[in-house]
Length: 327
Image (cartoon, rainbow, N blue to C red):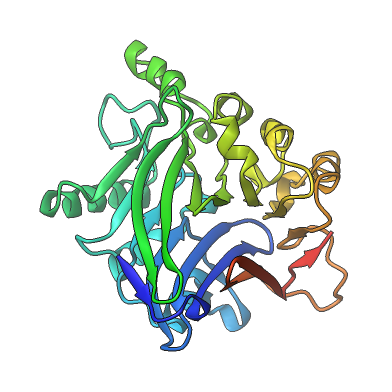
């Protein structure tokens, strides 16, 4: 249970972080803005880069430090592609405790029965660290495993406001779908595309839903709970708005949402045609660095959504940093 004296004191900040060539991370903070206090914190994936003078920058770490976060409430590792994983071990060691809920894909345990092979040393170290922490608290690590109903609830809590009752918050895991990856496990097969185990999740705040879709693919998207997808008001598009994840746009309600995506320059993501499909459903499609117009480009782009609460409505404003811009 979290609490604020008045609902107007509650603020949610969502940071969609992308880097100049590749890389994706999300930070979500529930704050009591009058006390400058974080009530609940979530980090999804991580990346870092060398900036000016070859100094290493991890924007997830910088944001958590800026808002005085000491212990993360949730850390989600969607899948072990390096553009979602670089320097995540630092975030884990610095901000995760036995009280932290750590979410990872199912059948990704650094065992012989895994459906993906772990060859990278740092990835192995991170998986081993997760399970060392889990040995101290059996409830720490949650392996994402969306059921036939199209999602799995992994976390829920209430925010109590003295003048507005209680708001209910749920974290729903939408992928990977167990019926898909479970078949690989049963047959002892290896999944070649790591996106096939990617976690996608919905943060549901009294029916106001935010989707952070990782790199989940069409195969999984098509089996998600369609009612929950239609309730989404903010969507970080899956797999950098690619053709292999375009199905998501088919299930979103027109004119009810804002969308954001991160980029991978080397393989030309996002795809223009898929961006156009999203733009048909919303006036606001933001990206961390798709077609920059600034001559003096930075090494990153951040889209910051700030939600404030005034009875009975939620109000949102958007701040853009670095290469981030509206398409």
